[in-house]
Image (cartoon, rainbow, N blue to C red):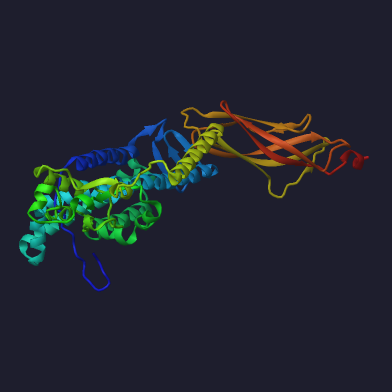
Length: 446
């Protein structure tokens, strides 16, 4: 670890296989496919997922969201947050061990490369402790060169979700976009080559939140003290107790001893479970490290459904229901009406009162052909509506003048509430506005 008065102490974790590691590899494969394939997928002419910050648009699975749909971003963030709370209360740091990007890249790319170039954990440690030599230099140079390549690929992939995969990878991105990719590449390289577990221990806030989100009934990676203690001795092998082989310590990427109990540094990678299982299976016993709750280890009754899980689950259900209702009511376009600057109302020579507005329509539908829009006004009898034809392609916006005229008569009030209705072939949007007059204009003219 990196202390205030100590130098960096690298962790040389031993390679381990087992059912939990095979499950993690399968999970990593799915996550890699999602991460690297999604930016290239096109749905209805648009990327499957693209966060277009300059235009303030989000393309997601064929739908287009604009700044007017910020409520969906809020609901998404709330859903992700409470999902983290919900699953942490049930299974602890499952995210860290099975889905965190740092864990995925370290276990999928970095550690296998290190073992291929520098040898197993014993050789790596001895070579580093012996100091710099030609053999160590070329191995480090090759390893770090590959790490730089990996960092660039990862940064470019994440950048593809903001700049577009085809534009970014073909060299058509802006200087700013490539500058950001370079910065993130440097950060990723520093993390993968040097910082590693220190991020989990010192920077990641999730480790600190975990103690507040878990309880005695949360399923965690646990050492079963009752079966494993006392450790060592000739009788330990026969009785199925801990034989002090320290395999669980050697394989831990965080450098902790799970036998010391629950620790914030544990990322629930289950490497210690597989390591202990290999040793104990040879002795004819089952593993001493398992996924279990603290209450279960002590023999107390455990509950999967309890107040905190009900609360988190209820909040998740409520957020999901709200999102579905809003999505069902969501129109495939945005429309706004504003009064033309410096214009309240005008008396035309033919005796009509004229109000001029600016109508802005944004088409959020991912359609190949232009979508026509029709404008009507409710709340004014015999109103004359003058607006040019509007037909917009996908993501296209247009601002056009909207003129509303009505014959002046004595009973016209000063302010008349009106409703401007913009209709597409699929939906209609109603916008509240006001029509201004001079009051009892007919009387004034006489």
